[in-house]
Image (cartoon, rainbow, N blue to C red; front, top):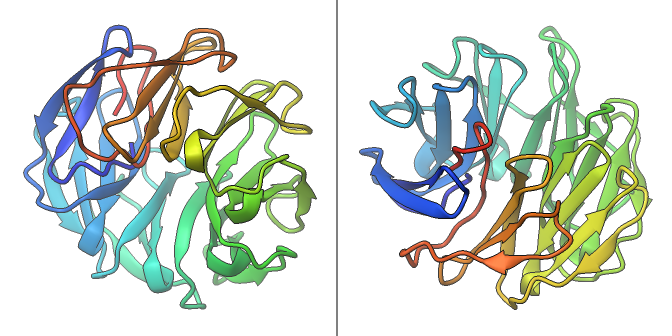
Length: 288
């Protein structure tokens, strides 16, 4: 998860209901996550810190992304090549599976909140004031793409058909079907800030402020609200299986679980009162 726990990670056990704290040894907060294999996981966060485990959430090693900025996002195109992005345009690249990082210029000093990889050398990053950056080859720098909006974009994801969705403030949803070159707006029916988005086949789910959860059954063409039974800020949502989904929030360790692909939700008790920024699953049983 793009975890807000400072030096521990909540790990899902067997049924996405039970959670256990594991210590990473880092003293910073985490905000971005990437699972490279069933055993290799990376987290990135405050002060340019990156931690990596090759032992299934044990044996953590700490490295730096070559920046003191807060890292908000991380994405890998394969088990070797990846990017982290953060505040003031901070960006770094790894070519060895996250063991080491080299700071790279993104161009603008706009804070970046999400980065996605489309495979190969193509990647897209989004951030404040509607900023969208795109990179298509190792020989070319990151370039600015017109988003058509000025609202901050908070999250992005790639769908199974290769489309990119970005969500953000004022209920904004953007979609690109040409690898991030052009973008179109989709009505969300909401004016609140949207913080997280995920897809499993044609089912899409969005998490947002004030307990907002949106659901699509047509690959993101249209969205409808679903009842979350909470007014807390929901920061992230992820599928564990085709039917089981977990959403997490910022206050009182808010964790919601659905067993019907996001149609209905119930709260999960985690025995912890930290703030959760994000969630991701390695497989159907293990998540952070």
